[in-house]
Length: 429
Image (tube, rainbow, N blue to C red; front, side):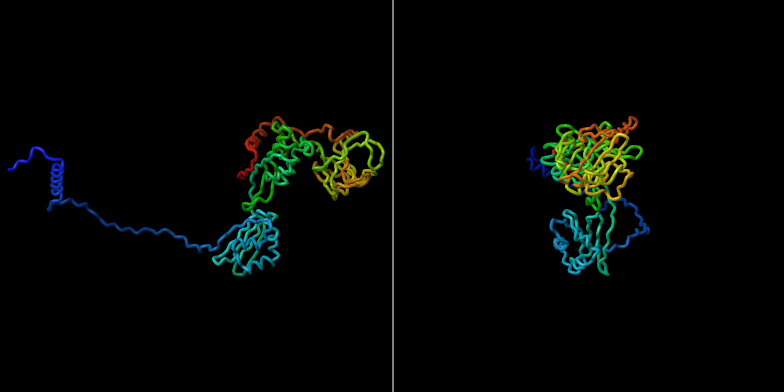
Protein backbone atom coordinates (compact mmCIF):
# COMPACT_ATOMS: atom_id res chain seq x y z
CA UNK A 1 0.00 0.00 0.00
CA UNK A 2 1.25 3.42 -0.89
CA UNK A 3 1.89 5.60 2.09
CA UNK A 4 0.44 9.11 2.34
CA UNK A 5 2.76 11.98 2.77
CA UNK A 6 3.55 12.88 6.36
CA UNK A 7 2.26 16.41 5.83
CA UNK A 8 -0.81 17.71 3.90
CA UNK A 9 -1.50 21.07 2.57
CA UNK A 10 -4.60 22.96 3.86
CA UNK A 11 -6.42 22.26 0.61
CA UNK A 12 -5.74 18.54 0.88
CA UNK A 13 -7.00 18.46 4.47
CA UNK A 14 -10.24 20.18 3.45
CA UNK A 15 -10.82 17.60 0.67
CA UNK A 16 -10.36 14.70 3.10
CA UNK A 17 -12.88 16.24 5.48
CA UNK A 18 -15.44 16.55 2.70
CA UNK A 19 -15.03 12.88 1.80
CA UNK A 20 -15.55 11.82 5.41
CA UNK A 21 -18.73 13.79 5.75
CA UNK A 22 -20.01 12.47 2.45
CA UNK A 23 -19.59 8.93 3.77
CA UNK A 24 -21.66 9.69 6.83
CA UNK A 25 -24.35 11.25 4.66
CA UNK A 26 -24.41 8.21 2.39
CA UNK A 27 -24.79 5.95 5.40
CA UNK A 28 -27.82 7.98 6.55
CA UNK A 29 -29.79 7.39 3.36
CA UNK A 30 -28.74 3.83 2.64
CA UNK A 31 -31.58 1.99 0.81
CA UNK A 32 -33.55 -0.55 2.83
CA UNK A 33 -33.57 1.57 5.99
CA UNK A 34 -37.12 1.72 7.54
CA UNK A 35 -38.63 4.35 9.92
CA UNK A 36 -41.52 3.89 12.33
CA UNK A 37 -44.68 5.74 10.99
CA UNK A 38 -46.98 7.85 13.25
CA UNK A 39 -50.60 6.62 13.28
CA UNK A 40 -53.18 9.16 11.91
CA UNK A 41 -56.99 9.38 12.01
CA UNK A 42 -59.38 11.60 9.98
CA UNK A 43 -62.01 13.46 12.00
CA UNK A 44 -64.87 15.42 10.42
CA UNK A 45 -66.97 17.84 12.49
CA UNK A 46 -69.76 20.24 11.42
CA UNK A 47 -69.19 23.85 12.62
CA UNK A 48 -71.87 26.51 13.07
CA UNK A 49 -71.42 29.44 10.70
CA UNK A 50 -71.45 32.97 12.26
CA UNK A 51 -74.49 35.17 11.71
CA UNK A 52 -73.66 37.78 9.10
CA UNK A 53 -75.35 41.19 9.26
CA UNK A 54 -77.15 42.20 6.10
CA UNK A 55 -75.06 44.45 3.94
CA UNK A 56 -75.99 48.09 4.36
CA UNK A 57 -76.20 50.11 1.23
CA UNK A 58 -73.29 52.49 1.03
CA UNK A 59 -74.10 56.18 1.48
CA UNK A 60 -73.02 57.74 -1.78
CA UNK A 61 -73.36 61.26 -0.43
CA UNK A 62 -70.22 63.34 -0.10
CA UNK A 63 -70.28 65.97 2.67
CA UNK A 64 -68.26 69.11 2.13
CA UNK A 65 -67.75 72.04 4.53
CA UNK A 66 -67.26 75.67 3.60
CA UNK A 67 -66.69 78.62 5.94
CA UNK A 68 -68.70 81.78 5.37
CA UNK A 69 -66.52 84.68 4.25
CA UNK A 70 -67.40 88.33 4.43
CA UNK A 71 -69.59 89.23 1.46
CA UNK A 72 -70.56 85.61 0.77
CA UNK A 73 -73.98 84.60 -0.56
CA UNK A 74 -75.53 81.16 -0.57
CA UNK A 75 -74.77 81.02 -4.28
CA UNK A 76 -71.06 81.76 -3.85
CA UNK A 77 -70.81 79.23 -1.01
CA UNK A 78 -72.38 76.44 -3.07
CA UNK A 79 -70.20 77.35 -6.03
CA UNK A 80 -67.08 76.98 -3.85
CA UNK A 81 -68.39 73.58 -2.79
CA UNK A 82 -68.59 72.60 -6.51
CA UNK A 83 -72.38 72.39 -6.46
CA UNK A 84 -73.99 73.10 -9.84
CA UNK A 85 -77.67 72.48 -9.28
CA UNK A 86 -80.16 74.95 -10.76
CA UNK A 87 -83.16 73.21 -9.19
CA UNK A 88 -81.61 73.38 -5.71
CA UNK A 89 -80.75 77.07 -6.11
CA UNK A 90 -84.28 77.84 -7.26
CA UNK A 91 -85.70 76.10 -4.18
CA UNK A 92 -83.35 77.89 -1.78
CA UNK A 93 -84.05 81.21 -3.46
CA UNK A 94 -87.85 81.03 -3.47
CA UNK A 95 -88.82 78.90 -0.45
CA UNK A 96 -89.64 81.11 2.61
CA UNK A 97 -88.32 78.41 4.95
CA UNK A 98 -84.83 78.92 3.51
CA UNK A 99 -84.57 82.56 4.64
CA UNK A 100 -81.98 81.80 7.37
CA UNK A 101 -79.50 81.07 4.58
CA UNK A 102 -79.63 84.73 3.58
CA UNK A 103 -78.41 85.88 7.02
CA UNK A 104 -74.95 84.39 6.80
CA UNK A 105 -72.49 85.18 9.59
CA UNK A 106 -68.78 85.21 8.67
CA UNK A 107 -66.90 82.31 10.19
CA UNK A 108 -69.88 79.97 10.43
CA UNK A 109 -69.72 76.59 8.69
CA UNK A 110 -72.04 75.51 5.87
CA UNK A 111 -72.09 71.75 5.25
CA UNK A 112 -73.37 70.43 1.94
CA UNK A 113 -73.85 66.87 0.70
CA UNK A 114 -73.67 65.97 -2.97
CA UNK A 115 -74.22 62.76 -4.89
CA UNK A 116 -71.83 61.19 -7.38
CA UNK A 117 -73.09 63.59 -10.05
CA UNK A 118 -72.44 66.67 -7.91
CA UNK A 119 -76.13 67.40 -7.29
CA UNK A 120 -77.13 68.86 -3.92
CA UNK A 121 -78.80 66.27 -1.70
CA UNK A 122 -78.35 67.85 1.74
CA UNK A 123 -77.41 71.07 3.48
CA UNK A 124 -76.82 72.00 7.15
CA UNK A 125 -76.24 75.47 8.57
CA UNK A 126 -76.28 76.95 12.08
CA UNK A 127 -78.47 80.05 11.87
CA UNK A 128 -77.76 83.29 13.72
CA UNK A 129 -80.46 82.48 16.29
CA UNK A 130 -78.62 79.31 17.32
CA UNK A 131 -81.02 76.92 15.55
CA UNK A 132 -79.81 74.27 13.12
CA UNK A 133 -81.20 74.70 9.60
CA UNK A 134 -81.20 71.68 7.31
CA UNK A 135 -82.50 71.07 3.78
CA UNK A 136 -82.58 67.46 2.57
CA UNK A 137 -83.56 66.06 -0.81
CA UNK A 138 -85.61 62.90 -1.33
CA UNK A 139 -87.74 61.47 -4.12
CA UNK A 140 -90.42 64.12 -3.53
CA UNK A 141 -87.96 67.02 -3.59
CA UNK A 142 -86.46 69.22 -0.89
CA UNK A 143 -87.82 69.53 2.64
CA UNK A 144 -86.59 71.97 5.28
CA UNK A 145 -86.24 71.50 9.02
CA UNK A 146 -85.04 73.88 11.72
CA UNK A 147 -84.92 73.74 15.48
CA UNK A 148 -82.76 73.55 18.54
CA UNK A 149 -79.88 71.13 18.58
CA UNK A 150 -78.25 69.51 21.62
CA UNK A 151 -75.67 71.91 22.98
CA UNK A 152 -72.65 71.62 25.20
CA UNK A 153 -71.09 74.25 27.43
CA UNK A 154 -67.34 74.75 27.34
CA UNK A 155 -65.14 76.94 29.49
CA UNK A 156 -63.12 79.61 27.70
CA UNK A 157 -60.13 81.52 29.06
CA UNK A 158 -58.96 84.74 27.42
CA UNK A 159 -56.54 87.46 28.47
CA UNK A 160 -55.65 90.85 27.07
CA UNK A 161 -53.62 93.97 27.66
CA UNK A 162 -55.03 97.45 27.24
CA UNK A 163 -53.26 99.64 24.69
CA UNK A 164 -55.92 102.27 24.00
CA UNK A 165 -59.28 101.20 25.46
CA UNK A 166 -60.90 98.27 27.21
CA UNK A 167 -63.13 97.43 24.25
CA UNK A 168 -60.17 97.63 21.88
CA UNK A 169 -58.20 95.19 24.03
CA UNK A 170 -61.24 92.94 24.38
CA UNK A 171 -61.72 92.83 20.60
CA UNK A 172 -58.04 92.03 20.09
CA UNK A 173 -58.32 89.15 22.58
CA UNK A 174 -61.48 87.83 20.91
CA UNK A 175 -63.63 88.57 23.95
CA UNK A 176 -67.37 88.82 23.11
CA UNK A 177 -69.01 92.19 23.84
CA UNK A 178 -71.46 90.55 26.27
CA UNK A 179 -68.56 89.22 28.36
CA UNK A 180 -66.77 92.60 28.25
CA UNK A 181 -69.88 94.32 29.62
CA UNK A 182 -70.26 91.62 32.26
CA UNK A 183 -66.61 92.11 33.24
CA UNK A 184 -67.25 95.81 33.78
CA UNK A 185 -70.30 94.98 35.87
CA UNK A 186 -68.38 92.50 38.06
CA UNK A 187 -65.69 95.04 39.00
CA UNK A 188 -67.89 98.16 38.89
CA UNK A 189 -67.70 98.57 42.66
CA UNK A 190 -63.88 98.59 42.77
CA UNK A 191 -62.79 100.05 39.41
CA UNK A 192 -63.92 103.24 37.68
CA UNK A 193 -63.67 102.04 34.07
CA UNK A 194 -63.91 105.58 32.75
CA UNK A 195 -61.16 107.20 34.82
CA UNK A 196 -58.99 104.38 36.23
CA UNK A 197 -58.03 102.46 33.07
CA UNK A 198 -54.42 102.90 31.93
CA UNK A 199 -52.26 101.60 29.11
CA UNK A 200 -50.66 98.32 30.21
CA UNK A 201 -53.53 97.21 32.46
CA UNK A 202 -54.26 93.50 32.01
CA UNK A 203 -57.29 91.29 32.38
CA UNK A 204 -58.06 87.57 32.34
CA UNK A 205 -61.56 86.11 32.07
CA UNK A 206 -62.86 82.56 32.43
CA UNK A 207 -66.38 82.27 31.04
CA UNK A 208 -68.90 79.82 29.61
CA UNK A 209 -69.55 79.39 25.89
CA UNK A 210 -72.44 77.34 24.49
CA UNK A 211 -71.68 75.28 21.37
CA UNK A 212 -74.08 73.68 18.90
CA UNK A 213 -72.71 71.23 16.32
CA UNK A 214 -69.21 72.43 17.14
CA UNK A 215 -70.05 76.11 16.57
CA UNK A 216 -70.17 78.76 19.36
CA UNK A 217 -73.67 80.24 19.56
CA UNK A 218 -73.88 82.09 22.90
CA UNK A 219 -71.90 83.09 25.95
CA UNK A 220 -72.85 82.31 29.52
CA UNK A 221 -71.62 83.42 32.91
CA UNK A 222 -68.21 84.72 33.92
CA UNK A 223 -66.83 82.05 36.27
CA UNK A 224 -63.71 83.93 37.34
CA UNK A 225 -61.93 87.13 36.35
CA UNK A 226 -58.84 89.13 37.17
CA UNK A 227 -58.15 92.78 36.41
CA UNK A 228 -54.78 94.40 37.04
CA UNK A 229 -55.40 98.15 37.21
CA UNK A 230 -52.43 100.44 37.84
CA UNK A 231 -50.54 97.68 39.61
CA UNK A 232 -53.46 96.66 41.86
CA UNK A 233 -54.87 93.20 41.14
CA UNK A 234 -58.60 92.60 41.55
CA UNK A 235 -60.04 89.07 41.39
CA UNK A 236 -63.60 87.79 41.29
CA UNK A 237 -65.00 84.27 41.58
CA UNK A 238 -68.58 83.22 40.97
CA UNK A 239 -69.83 81.03 43.81
CA UNK A 240 -73.18 79.46 44.55
CA UNK A 241 -74.10 79.49 48.22
CA UNK A 242 -75.89 76.55 49.86
CA UNK A 243 -79.18 78.48 49.56
CA UNK A 244 -78.75 78.52 45.74
CA UNK A 245 -77.90 82.23 45.38
CA UNK A 246 -74.94 83.19 43.17
CA UNK A 247 -72.64 86.16 43.57
CA UNK A 248 -69.05 87.24 42.97
CA UNK A 249 -66.47 87.19 45.75
CA UNK A 250 -62.80 88.03 46.18
CA UNK A 251 -60.13 85.47 47.09
CA UNK A 252 -60.88 85.87 50.80
CA UNK A 253 -64.67 85.70 50.46
CA UNK A 254 -65.52 89.40 50.42
CA UNK A 255 -68.58 90.11 48.30
CA UNK A 256 -67.97 92.21 45.19
CA UNK A 257 -71.60 93.15 45.01
CA UNK A 258 -72.01 96.64 46.34
CA UNK A 259 -75.23 97.81 47.87
CA UNK A 260 -74.97 100.68 45.34
CA UNK A 261 -73.38 101.04 41.91
CA UNK A 262 -71.25 104.13 41.45
CA UNK A 263 -72.85 105.01 38.12
CA UNK A 264 -76.38 104.43 36.80
CA UNK A 265 -75.20 104.80 33.17
CA UNK A 266 -72.63 102.55 31.49
CA UNK A 267 -69.55 104.23 29.95
CA UNK A 268 -70.64 107.84 30.29
CA UNK A 269 -68.81 111.10 30.88
CA UNK A 270 -69.26 113.28 33.99
CA UNK A 271 -70.01 116.84 32.88
CA UNK A 272 -70.82 118.34 36.26
CA UNK A 273 -69.99 117.05 39.72
CA UNK A 274 -71.37 117.56 43.20
CA UNK A 275 -70.70 121.10 44.45
CA UNK A 276 -72.21 123.71 46.78
CA UNK A 277 -71.66 126.54 44.28
CA UNK A 278 -72.16 126.23 40.52
CA UNK A 279 -73.33 128.70 37.90
CA UNK A 280 -76.55 127.06 36.70
CA UNK A 281 -76.52 126.77 32.87
CA UNK A 282 -80.30 127.10 32.64
CA UNK A 283 -81.18 129.58 35.43
CA UNK A 284 -77.94 131.59 35.02
CA UNK A 285 -77.50 131.97 38.76
CA UNK A 286 -75.10 130.56 41.32
CA UNK A 287 -76.56 127.71 43.33
CA UNK A 288 -75.63 124.31 44.78
CA UNK A 289 -75.50 121.30 42.47
CA UNK A 290 -76.48 118.39 44.69
CA UNK A 291 -75.85 115.59 42.25
CA UNK A 292 -73.69 114.33 39.40
CA UNK A 293 -74.45 114.86 35.71
CA UNK A 294 -73.59 112.05 33.27
CA UNK A 295 -73.50 113.00 29.59
CA UNK A 296 -75.03 110.36 27.31
CA UNK A 297 -77.09 110.23 24.11
CA UNK A 298 -80.86 110.45 24.40
CA UNK A 299 -82.29 106.98 24.87
CA UNK A 300 -79.31 105.55 26.78
CA UNK A 301 -80.61 103.07 29.40
CA UNK A 302 -80.54 104.20 33.04
CA UNK A 303 -80.06 101.50 35.68
CA UNK A 304 -81.15 101.37 39.31
CA UNK A 305 -77.99 101.64 41.40
CA UNK A 306 -79.41 99.48 44.19
CA UNK A 307 -82.38 97.34 45.16
CA UNK A 308 -85.29 99.52 46.19
CA UNK A 309 -88.91 100.57 45.85
CA UNK A 310 -90.18 103.25 43.46
CA UNK A 311 -91.09 106.27 45.57
CA UNK A 312 -91.96 108.63 42.71
CA UNK A 313 -92.17 108.42 38.92
CA UNK A 314 -93.38 111.36 36.83
CA UNK A 315 -92.68 115.06 36.17
CA UNK A 316 -91.32 117.39 38.84
CA UNK A 317 -90.30 121.03 38.13
CA UNK A 318 -86.68 121.39 37.03
CA UNK A 319 -86.06 117.64 37.23
CA UNK A 320 -88.38 117.06 34.29
CA UNK A 321 -89.21 113.35 34.01
CA UNK A 322 -87.74 111.91 37.20
CA UNK A 323 -87.64 108.67 39.21
CA UNK A 324 -86.99 108.47 42.95
CA UNK A 325 -86.13 105.17 44.61
CA UNK A 326 -86.19 104.44 48.34
CA UNK A 327 -83.60 101.80 49.23
CA UNK A 328 -83.99 101.60 53.00
CA UNK A 329 -84.59 103.93 55.92
CA UNK A 330 -81.42 105.92 55.12
CA UNK A 331 -80.74 105.87 51.38
CA UNK A 332 -82.69 107.43 48.48
CA UNK A 333 -81.58 107.92 44.85
CA UNK A 334 -82.86 110.35 42.19
CA UNK A 335 -82.71 110.02 38.36
CA UNK A 336 -83.71 113.21 36.52
CA UNK A 337 -84.11 114.73 33.02
CA UNK A 338 -85.24 111.39 31.57
CA UNK A 339 -86.74 111.08 28.10
CA UNK A 340 -89.07 108.26 29.14
CA UNK A 341 -89.59 105.60 31.78
CA UNK A 342 -89.33 101.84 31.56
CA UNK A 343 -92.81 100.66 30.47
CA UNK A 344 -94.96 99.58 33.41
CA UNK A 345 -92.84 101.26 36.09
CA UNK A 346 -95.09 102.54 38.87
CA UNK A 347 -94.97 103.77 42.45
CA UNK A 348 -94.54 100.96 44.97
CA UNK A 349 -92.88 98.60 42.51
CA UNK A 350 -89.75 96.81 43.70
CA UNK A 351 -86.69 97.08 41.44
CA UNK A 352 -83.34 95.33 41.62
CA UNK A 353 -79.83 96.63 41.21
CA UNK A 354 -79.00 96.94 37.52
CA UNK A 355 -82.63 96.95 36.33
CA UNK A 356 -83.40 99.46 33.56
CA UNK A 357 -85.79 102.03 35.00
CA UNK A 358 -85.63 104.80 32.39
CA UNK A 359 -83.74 106.42 29.52
CA UNK A 360 -81.52 109.49 29.24
CA UNK A 361 -83.17 112.67 27.97
CA UNK A 362 -83.10 116.46 28.43
CA UNK A 363 -86.46 117.24 30.04
CA UNK A 364 -86.88 119.92 32.73
CA UNK A 365 -84.12 122.46 33.28
CA UNK A 366 -81.58 120.77 31.02
CA UNK A 367 -79.58 122.38 28.23
CA UNK A 368 -78.37 119.09 26.73
CA UNK A 369 -78.95 115.34 26.94
CA UNK A 370 -77.68 113.97 30.25
CA UNK A 371 -78.70 112.20 33.43
CA UNK A 372 -78.79 114.05 36.74
CA UNK A 373 -78.15 111.52 39.53
CA UNK A 374 -78.49 112.20 43.26
CA UNK A 375 -77.76 110.19 46.38
CA UNK A 376 -79.46 111.19 49.63
CA UNK A 377 -78.45 109.78 53.01
CA UNK A 378 -80.98 110.40 55.77
CA UNK A 379 -82.51 113.06 53.51
CA UNK A 380 -79.24 114.96 53.04
CA UNK A 381 -77.68 115.12 49.51
CA UNK A 382 -74.25 113.48 49.36
CA UNK A 383 -71.69 113.22 46.56
CA UNK A 384 -72.49 109.85 44.93
CA UNK A 385 -68.91 109.57 43.63
CA UNK A 386 -67.33 109.90 47.09
CA UNK A 387 -69.82 108.76 49.70
CA UNK A 388 -68.91 105.51 51.45
CA UNK A 389 -71.26 102.83 50.16
CA UNK A 390 -72.14 99.68 52.09
CA UNK A 391 -71.14 96.28 50.71
CA UNK A 392 -73.14 93.06 50.58
CA UNK A 393 -72.58 90.43 53.25
CA UNK A 394 -69.37 88.35 52.90
CA UNK A 395 -69.16 84.57 52.99
CA UNK A 396 -69.81 83.26 56.50
CA UNK A 397 -67.04 81.45 58.42
CA UNK A 398 -69.01 78.19 58.16
CA UNK A 399 -69.01 78.42 54.34
CA UNK A 400 -65.41 79.64 53.94
CA UNK A 401 -63.82 76.19 53.58
CA UNK A 402 -66.27 75.06 50.91
CA UNK A 403 -65.81 78.33 49.03
CA UNK A 404 -62.01 78.09 48.98
CA UNK A 405 -62.14 74.48 47.76
CA UNK A 406 -64.59 75.35 44.96
CA UNK A 407 -62.65 78.32 43.59
CA UNK A 408 -59.15 76.78 43.87
CA UNK A 409 -59.21 75.29 40.31
CA UNK A 410 -60.31 78.64 38.85
CA UNK A 411 -57.57 80.46 40.76
CA UNK A 412 -55.08 78.00 39.27
CA UNK A 413 -56.27 78.75 35.74
CA UNK A 414 -55.92 82.50 36.31
CA UNK A 415 -52.39 81.89 37.57
CA UNK A 416 -51.56 79.99 34.37
CA UNK A 417 -52.94 82.84 32.27
CA UNK A 418 -50.57 85.27 33.96
CA UNK A 419 -47.59 83.35 32.61
CA UNK A 420 -48.37 84.31 29.02
CA UNK A 421 -48.69 87.74 27.38
CA UNK A 422 -51.88 86.79 25.54
CA UNK A 423 -53.90 83.65 26.24
CA UNK A 424 -56.84 82.22 24.32
CA UNK A 425 -57.78 78.73 25.45
CA UNK A 426 -60.92 76.65 25.24
CA UNK A 427 -61.34 73.74 27.63
CA UNK A 428 -63.64 70.73 27.36
CA UNK A 429 -67.10 70.92 28.84
